Image 1 (cartoon, helix red, strand yellow):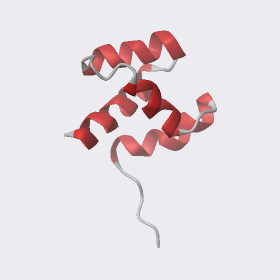
Image 2 (cartoon, rainbow, N blue to C red; image 1 turned 60 degrees about the horizontal axis):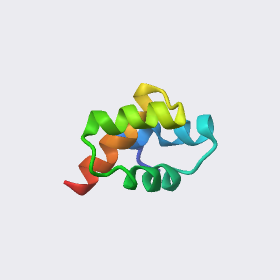
Image 3 (cartoon, rainbow, N blue to C red; image 1 turned 180 degrees about the vertical axis):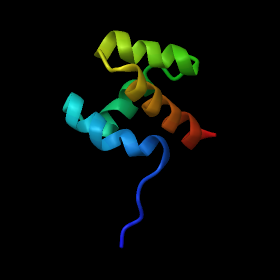
Image 4 (cartoon, rainbow, N blue to C red; image 1 turned 45 degrees about the horizontal axis):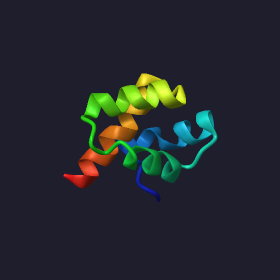
Length: 68
């Protein structure tokens, strides 16, 4: 039995389906603005890629937690 994905990663299948890009694409995009603060990165994704707030926040939150 597989364990259910929890936390921000649980949004990944929906993000990939909605925006048609693999998660690595979004991680690579955020690497371009890694000097920005959390909410600045969220705003950048929303502005540059038209990603919804919840999805943008999940991607940024995942990367911030992973790098902590």
